[in-house]
Image 1 (cartoon, rainbow, N blue to C red):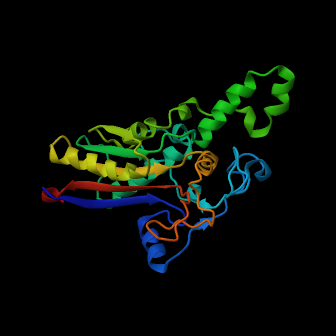
Image 2: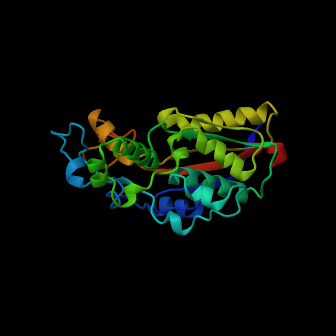
Image 3: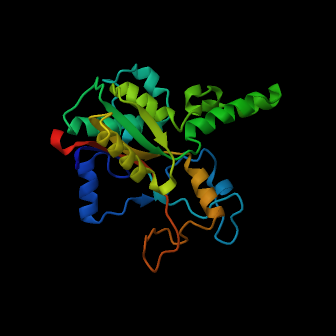
Length: 268
């Protein structure tokens, strides 16, 4: 049976909702930029190298970065306490916000016992996960070193739930939105969102769900991606991603989240 798209949601560079994203596409807007200040948590001089010299460094900080999300995110209205949500990494927030957008456009609100979520999610450390590990390591140092290094925002240990950045975002988003037909995450690299949609359609076709939210998120600690893919010589030296173009010279990283709400056409 055909599957209908009944809702959309997104958190993307220069586009915190689907309509703005479409307007950017229609206008040919370039949303790539230098990394926001403070995102890498270390001075640029320690992270930046060159195309010819980049061992454990990156030769570019250019990418697609989400800005302004905190101004639009409302942690209220979920089946979780706002303070519990705000203690989590932005990755969790993007999933909850984008999935809620898609459900809202579909005219649905929880509890939804026959609705589920499939999330494509890169299994890399998040910023909060990295900060948690950093706090653990620094806390194990001798007192003099610990006091010298655990300064400012580093003194407070991040919420321990941020260690579980692969599957937990899907589980908590389903709980927060009242989705009762299951939730899980997968990592199929660049194909993750396509697999999420396929698996969501399977749930609709086999009758185990009547409504599925499918999508993917990337909000990993961005420096890991830049350094790792430069190590593979996979990052564009010109800072331009050109898929399937003869002038392509590598990829350019972008972050964000995108979701669709799906149901069988007969129910749409």
